[in-house]
Structure formats: structure tokens, C-alpha cells
Image 1: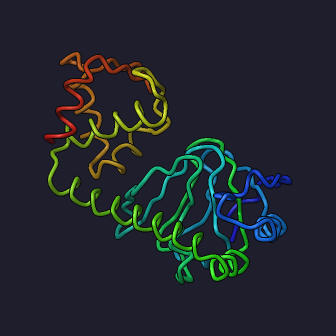
Image 2: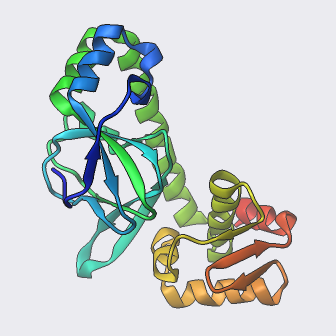
Image 3: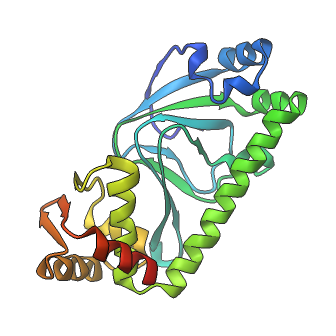
Length: 230
């Protein structure tokens, strides 16, 4: 179920995920039952408690997975990067999404009809095994996330977020944060005020420089230590 009216374009076979595990017939079947959809930053991709109808694979852009709890408190569970499935638990029987997803940046997502995708899984044991491995990796991530939230102090959690964007997203010590201070707080499991205070402390200690959304990490040694020790 698409939550916006995004633009759709044709795709080539090379855009089918993990095509090396598929037969030419299976690639063609998926290709004929999928579309690439363009989203703008802040567009909603799907909402919590809506029915699943497609398997989604991110071709470009950053996507946040979030859940709204009591009193409309939002928790961001994960930032999904390109060449990853989005909400792949829906492949294995969930009829409704347990969380929401929205675009942090402009994004392109491959939408594959879920019935078609399941039929390919039933035909292809190697492909099914791969998807189970990916699902297991996702599950381990959420266990690690829970441990981080429970055991690390806020400076350690903020350091971990800074390292994620520096190393895995931008590969640079200087970058523009694509998240607002509120979103950083939702990702770190704290309040906006606490995030602002922690970043200010990092800046005062010359661990980082901040100019609006622009961040420069001055000491990876300290950031790494904070991230590991919490």
C-alpha cells in the first residue's frame, strides 16, 4: 500500500536484488511484477498497522524505520541504506506492518508484488536461504539495539550514531546530518534537549565541531572509546 503518489519508472533486470541467485525466468517474473518508485525526503513509504502488499528493496536514499507508541512517542529503530530490503519480515507471513517507514532523503525503492516474490522463494531454496540469513541479521541488529539502549549512557549512544553516519554513510569525518535534533533523539532513545546538551558537550570538549547540521569529528579515538564503553 503506497502512502503517497510517487513517480514510477521502468527498470532493467540489473535492478532486481540478488539476481545472481535467480534463474532467468525468475528474474523476468519479478521484473514484470515490480516497479521502481521515487520518493521525496520526508515522504511516508508505509504506515504502522497498514496491510503489506509488496516487498521493498532500497535502490538509493536513506529510510528510517520508526514506531509510534503511547502518547505519540516515536522511536526510530533503524536507518536503512541502499541495497537492503525494507521491512523484509513481511515476506514471511506478517499481514500488517508493525512499524512505519519514511524517507530521510530522496529515495528510489523497488516494489515487488509480494505474491510473486513468495512464489519465487518457494521455487528457489538458495534464494530462500539467503533471505533467512538477511532476516537473522536484522533480528541480531534489534537485539544489539536493545542492549545498547539499556546499557550505554547517552554519550555512548550519540557517539555510536556519529560513527554510523561518518563511517557507513558518508565515509568522511565531515558531513551534513540528514536528521533533525528531534530525529537524533528518537534514534538515541532520549529527548531533544538531552541531544542538544550532549552535542554541545562534545563540541566544548573539542571532540567535534558543529555548525548547524554540519558535523566534523576531530577525535575518532574519543568517539570510538565512548561508543565501545558507553
